[in-house]
Image (cartoon, rainbow, N blue to C red; front, side, top):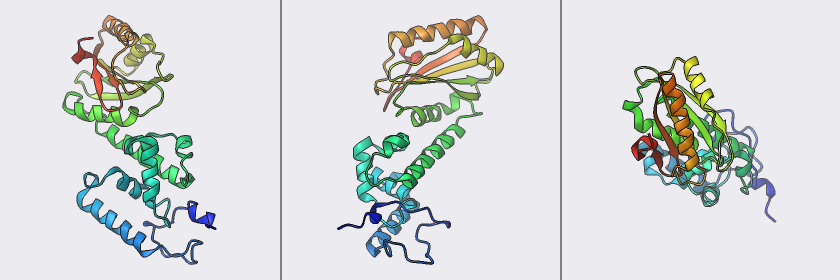
Length: 254
């Protein structure tokens, strides 16, 4: 009979690195050499070539190493990709969703969500306090990182100063799988509080299709009218899909 303890996550070590020598042997014994060597090879390849040199499942293995220090995590990485689709979708999955994957305990779920939070913070730092025109691609990357895999609609507003520098990024509302309530007066009121001169609206379509709906177009026009009345410019409204986005300005809706 298989020892069930072999499939449970162990606490994270106190010291950097998951191969720290323990005062007493772990219940599962020493890490087999083939697993230890595999981990060392993956780490070396990552340090030499970065994430570009690694497929999604190997990058997931690296994430799981610290949380699951005494087990071959390659099958688990493959299972996560089978369940959620790709690396970004795994990171964006909720703790409850991740918890349904056999063999993925609390420590591993926490590790995944820490990586997600770090990715969000890094991508946000690349656009905040910077001119939007010169960092447009970074702005789109940030939107996809934070919104593309959400299961409900989320509405955000980027507030810009007179030089089109991003001064605030705020989530205004969360909705359902196909609707999010937006109040144009509140959007514009917040712009006045921040002394913003321009806006960029962003929301996601959980279906994955970024095509604007009639309601999206109508809401955008309401925000534009409210902003125009106060001398605030609405630069764009971007809808984020799973792998693409639609710009209202480029599509002729603004």
